[in-house]
Image (cartoon, rainbow, N blue to C red):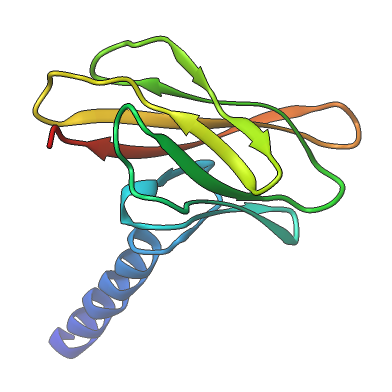
Length: 135
């Protein structure tokens, strides 16, 4: 009985660890601070990644990859622990770009939001959190 309980505990710990540390996130939320965020959409994936360092008051380049049948009508960044408005994410020839305002907090928490529209006009928001600290 003790062996069975130990194996069950190890198995449940493994499942928990795999789900918590997975870069693919079906829930629509992700921590972008640790790297590329990948969201599940049906049998495909939506991904977002910073291509340049996350520095306030400088252009920040992003990569946003979508399946062909989806559109990105709106994307923005907003402060979580200090509201600083909605900063748009704009499409360029090289990908996407945004600019973060300067903040006096020791650790600023941000949320990147993607409104993804499918072929039926339904919109779902995917969110990715990240952080900045003053230099």
